[in-house]
Amino acid sequence: MAPKKNSAKRPQPSTPKPSAPARIVKVQSSDGHILQADVRALLLSSTLAATIKGYDDENKPLEKLEVNNVVGFTLKLVLEWCEKHKEDDPAIAQAEKDKKNIFIPSWDRHFLTKLPMGNLFDLITAAYHLDITGLINYGCKTVANSAKGKSTEEMRELFGIPEPWEQPSTSTATWDD
Amino acid sequence: MILSKYPGLVQNEIFRNMEFSELLLLSLVSKNMEKLIKSSQKKRLKSINKIVYFTDGKNHLCVYIPREPDVDVIMRFEEFEKTEIPDFQLNVSEKIIDFRLFTRERNKDFWLPETGFHPYPVACVHKSDKESIIESVHNYFLDFFGNSTYYWKADFFGGVQYYFPTHLQNVSFCMSTYVADDFKMRNLENFFSSSPVLKSVQLFTSNSELSFNPESKFYQAESIDTIQDSITIPDILNHFQGKQAFMECKECKIWNLINFVKKWKSGEAFRKLEYLKVTVSLHEFNEIIIQNIIGVKYIDANKQPPTHTLPRV
Image (cartoon, rainbow over all chains, first blue to last red; front, top):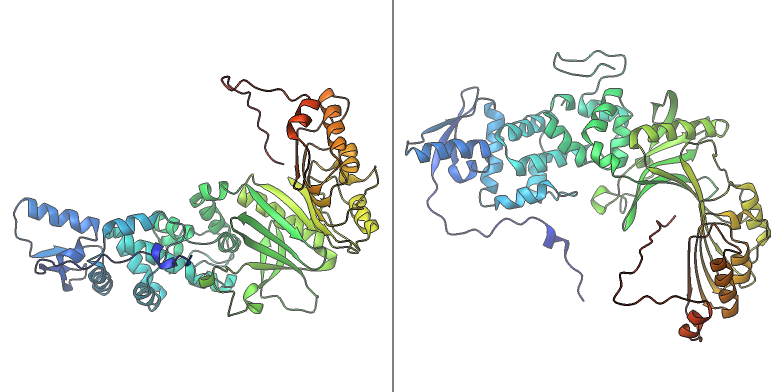
């Protein structure tokens, strides 16, 4: 019997379906940048999906969505990720959420690992605020992977952990040892 | 990136994606990180019910969490010369211990996270300080992993002096070995006489002459698991003082077994024994006759049978 291929268990993007013409809307970041996005991509964010539904239910024209807690640079990354995944079945991300071993597809691995840690941090935080399950899954797995094989010194640097004799570096940090 | 500034849900998700060895090392970096991991991963850490120290009596001692089909190594101990330079030091239960990274000797072709391998910290043990280093690490495990059951498992090879840290809290001692035909029984007897009473012994042998001193601590083990070609049932069963025995052989003298079961049933001997399983692969006896001789009670198929389950030691 031929061995089962691992890829059978991996998330696969759903088969592209013949779809309606893209519905493009403007999205404004907290620092005033205005970007454009396909509504299907924005629906990956539960937060934005609720807003869009509100407009649709009231038959109000949706011209611009304001995202008040994400800056332009990060919002561009969020939209790039959502655009890539707009055809995905949302159930995949939900199923992945509870898995012990999340498999990161190669496009996402490349997209996330090329980012400097600070940008990855902002992207995951934005994904959290916008409630984008798939992006949270892959982002967190990427951060966890980045700690593999690191010395304690490298871990301190990677995760911003102060030395025992140092004070917290920012007012919001909770470290006190 | 400051991990402490992430929302709690994101922190949980990052920790959830880390292996136990990585969480352990990260927890040792800072006391607050330790608190954060312990509270965020409480359920996961609590789900570990078994942690094993595995030693071959030489220079190798590793700690792992059994996980089917493999194991998760969380730390290794290695003898270190004072002249060698460690990669970093950590405060483990108020003791400063030298560590080095496993990656120093990592085989890049096979031992990659992508192939299922996860690096783990290696504690550098100076001979003079071995006992206190192991004790500090163990105390940290007790605090970090909580109420898991800890086993110190010796993989026995002849002629090696084994170390048993009997002062460690909450640790049961076990051994496993393969006894070949040319094996020196004296070495094995020495092992049992120098060891504490063992929780479990696994013994695999092709040596049909295998026989222990009646006073041997082998017979005091709580559980024995033997695989022999020709079982030395009279020897093992007549002296065994533990609770559970699992014995497998190709052939045996059936009267030895019958006499044993009769003595056990009558309460004449083996009062501690709770569970016995003997598997004879090449038997030529009639099971019904044997069951009648030892007085097996038959339960009416229409009645609810009594249930009595014992956990395997």
